Length: 449
Ligand SMILES: Cc1cc2nc3c(=O)[nH]c(=O)nc-3n(C[C@H](O)[C@H](O)[C@H](O)COP(=O)(O)O)c2cc1C
Ligand code: SF4
Image (cartoon, rainbow, N blue to C red; front, side):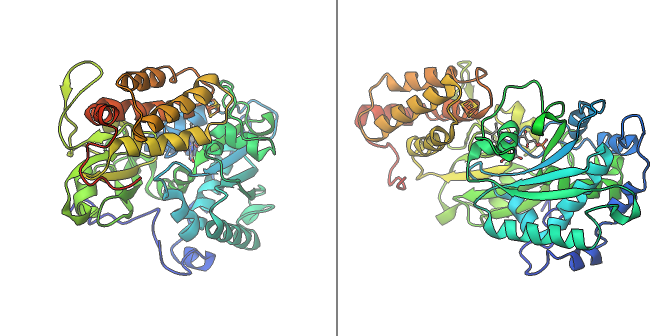
């Protein structure tokens, strides 16, 4: 099997009791890469470490928070000229349905994240960092706080870290259970003590972020990959996986597979290998119907036949599709947070779509009319169909409402609701039509919502 010989970096020690401690991390050579980077001189003009910025560029590391933006591009836009305080913020909000990859790092490998943060902080001349962690993550938060305390006690955090003359402060901060606080500007609003409202960009956080100061926001996984980049060197690291999507990814496999769970693999893995080899195939040996490939906001893939695309052409989705950023994009979907949600033949796509629309309506912060009203109208329409009162024209109305919700709002939550609805209706139109015409699902023995 493709990933048989791959040795996990992010999930190293996962699910082993007591593995997360500093003592264990040091036994594995922990913090040696941070020491290496701390020995690199900072450029006095910019107060950053150009050699390390270059290494990240060579690695072609892409952010694991959803968009897959190159980390070096974000670092390149950082306002090094500003005389203000600089901040690093770790995004561990992870509230996208199906996504649970960051919690395994903070629970079982928190020092890997702290080491990655130290590397980023020294490289970017940052002294203060926050880890914004999802409010519902109680045990995860406890492990994180304990690990941060250990790092302070051992001199890896605090003043004059390891005699470098630099100070590094890290503060874990719990959210309060709002999906929108995972959006970077919503996260920063919440961190500042305000309501978690996203802000219009530009300015981007790297120019004006926390307390209007330059702020680097990265996903937990992105920062946790930095020690491995230092260890291997950017060029070697870039060779793991496809050229444009290098490095490992933690896939969160959920839904109707036999072996649900987290699987760390290079992005060479295909959908088929994920579902049938790692996932062990479909529950009760039923037929595969559909897969949402990257968290609930990403367009669904159809595996029980062809469909007519929005361009009027007949299409089929391939199970041999490689699970990397660019291949998913080329297949009209996105890798997002790599949360792979599998649905078998007894899944009613109207009820699945209703389920996820309710989530987005509930989580819309309400600032923008297309999102506030659009998510509400989508929920009302699908609810009407689901409860047997749909009208034949409702299917087109769904597409029309979704079509007006993209690209017109402060943040991407609106698109995150419109995109999957558009894909569900386009690819499973016959199910929506049947429900409207007959007041019930066309799926035999459909599993209840
Ligand atoms: C509605 C919404 C929710 C988001 N939730 C998360 C999240 O839980 N975790 C995360 O890392 N990024 C999330 N993002 C993406 C962040 O805004 C940001 O792009 C990311 O943290 C950048 O990290 P990266 O550069 O390491 O990918 C979300 C974006 C949107 C629009
Ligand atoms: S798109 Fe939705 S969630 Fe984002 S700022 Fe606008 S109303 Fe809030």
